Image (cartoon, rainbow, N blue to C red; front, side, top):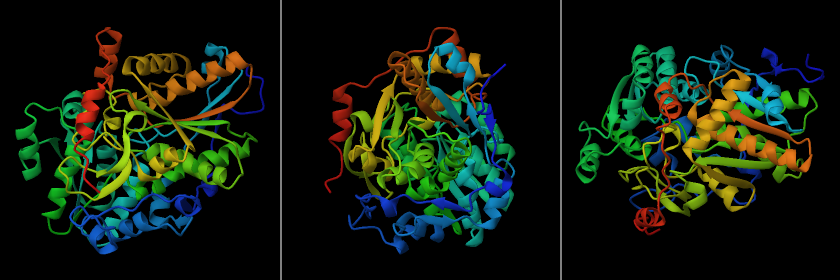
Amino acid sequence: MLTTEIPYKTYLGEDELPKAWYNVRPVMKNKPAPLLNPATHQPATLDELSRVFCTELAKQELNETDEYIPIPQEVRDFYKMYRPSPLVRAYFLEKALGTPAHIYYKFEGNNTSGSHKLNSAIAQAYYAKKQGLKSVTTETGAGQWGTALSMACAFFGLDCHVYMVKCSYDQKPHRREVMRTYGASVTPSPSDTTAVGRKILAENPGTAGSLGCAISEAVETALNTPDCRYVLGSVLSQVLVHQTIIGLETKAALEKNGVTPDVIIGCAGGGSNLGGLITPFVGDFIQGKNNCRFIAVEPAACPSLTRGRYAYDYCDTGMVCPLAKMYTLGCTYMPAAIHAGGLRYHGMSSILSQLYDDKILEATSVKQTQVFEAARLFARTEGTLPAPESSHAIYAAIQEALRCKETGKAENIVFGLTGTGYFDMMSYQKFNDGIMTDYVPTDEEILKSLSRLPNV
């Protein structure tokens, strides 16, 4: 029997669901650098951003003054279908590790999309519908974002066109069928349906694609389709704001149990779940209200924070999107076809990049076989099969717990379990069969891509 006052799972009541998202930029001492117009290299204006994004979302992208942004009632009502999500104490993982640390995870896989992505998808679909648009386009890596957006668009009656990174399109056919079931059209990227896709294919025959490629195709389609806008599942500041529903709920649940976190960990691709989890705590850290450590965990095959350069770069491979100052491997970098498809992005959120540059955020990179070893241990002890992306955070949480075992300190470790891995069985099969391999890019590969950074 568990002899502790802290419950196994903590659920907040419906009345405790946050009424506003959190925006950390007003309290940051060093603000993220502005997005730049790709043609003029001048700060992008609201009018320019509104040609690509919904107007209200463009406003949120530029908002550096409001610490809290009200959540529309229609979005809150939708959230109530699956939120608040549980904060779980990983007692059995703790026991297996023999650590004095207390490990908690915020579980975001308790909805049909299987991940945290629905938190922003429903918000972006709401604003598109409110603006009177008929359709939206987007990209997706592993498929969680595309699934979430197809669900949200079905709810609001919007057409949805998803460009899915080719290696994930091939690896995860069932994920694309969920999108199609919700009414979305799904195209493997790069494709011959857009000018930028044809250009990328000509320059990189046989490429497995990347999120940067898919973004370019989705933006081109949006710009050439009446009553249509592009929506993005990560990287942008607006997306991190929507995802703070995760961190706000985590904060409330910890406070409910009298727990003060020492370490908070998240996987990092473009930064949406990590930023959503940590920024409510980062805001307190900046204001001297906590002394927490924040750790980003990225794949060794796509190490934008740990091996990238802090510079202005295009957000997409086709170089049609605004430029963002971020830690980047270069927009032409083509990551290996690792199984954590949602983390195969060449850059990182401008907010998180600035926090990393300010030494508020730490970062580490992990090989995929190490990631799946951590996933297997978690599945065997905690009973949930985690997504490959989420398992990066699990790996780092285990390492922190083992550190506590050496020091004897009973630290409180929190990580984001962003989704489930039940559509990733091909990946688990390769791991279980012992044929999964690791790929770490050489310095020469990264420098070649970085040499093409725009001169800003």
